[in-house]
Length: 89
Image (cartoon, rainbow, N blue to C red; front, side, top):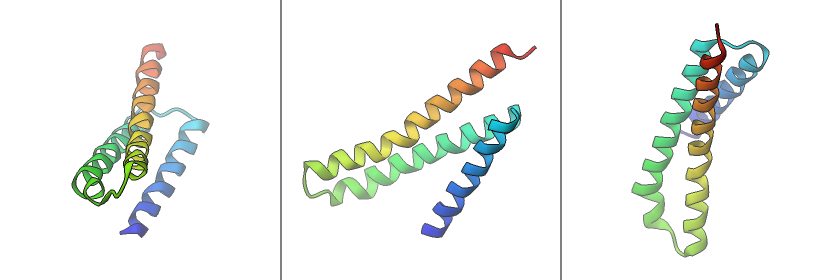
């Protein structure tokens, strides 16, 4: 399963690099949707597995931080998509 996450991260890096070179609306929306789904999967995994295995408050803080990363990234990407659509002719 870990190989799948690595492949996902590599594909995401390539897609973001492509967006840096030239904006493509379909790719930007695809990346935003994918990162949003990743945020949901991360939160679901944390709620169903990680929280029950936390031993102390520091473990819980680490879980919250791990969930915040994809969530903040999704919010930022959707903001990018919205701003880009607003300025396109």
